[in-house]
Image (cartoon, rainbow over all chains, first blue to last red; front, side):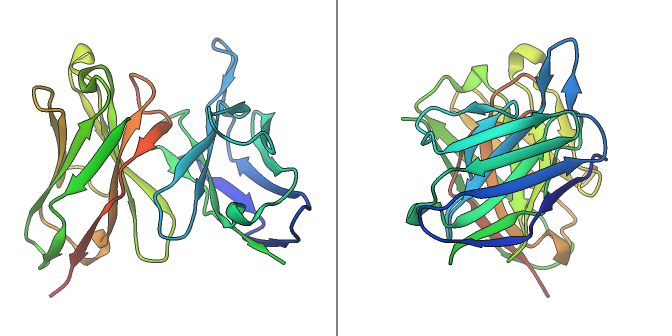
Length: 113
Length: 122
C-alpha cells in the first residue's frame, strides 16, 4: 500500500499569515503517460464531511478561494494557504489515487494562533 | 445541486449485518462511480471501497480489511448506492461517507454525503 505522511500534524498560524502543509509519498504518484500526479487535497471543517480543494496535485476546484494552492510532483507535495482566514480552521488531508487501496495522509490540524 | 444522503446507520452487535444506502440527486448517477469512505471517532479518513458505473460493468474494489465482508452495489434506476456490511467488528465503528468519484477507476471524489454513524458494540 502507498503510505502518505503529512507534516506537521498540527499547525497554529495567525490570521492573514501563510500556512504550508506537506505530504510525502513512499512511491511516486506521477503517471508519466498521463503527465498527472494522482494526489488530491481535502479540507474537513469541524463537524462537516471533507470537501475537495485540489486535484491532480495542483488543480484548484471550482469555488475554492485562490489563497489555496497545491504544488509538487512525484513523491513530494505541498498545500499552501497564502493568507489564513477564520474559515480555514480545519483538518487537511492528502489522498492518493495512483493505486488501490486508495490511501489518505493522517491529517494536519490547522488552528488560529 | 449535487446531493448524496446516507442512511441506514445505527447500533449493531459484533457479527451482525447492516446495509447503508446512499441516495443521490442533481446529477446523472449512472455516469459516475461511487466510493465509500469511513472515519472512526476522532481519527482520519479510510477508504472502504468503490463501485464503477454500469458502463464499466459496475465492478468493485475494496480495502483489504473489509474485503469478503462488505459489498457495494448500485441501483441506477433510483440513483442509490449501497454498502452491505456483514460480520461487523468493533473496529468497523465509524462515520461512513459515500462520495461521487470523478473517474471510472477509484480516484478522488468531488462530492460527499454528510455521513452516517455506525456503532458496533456488544
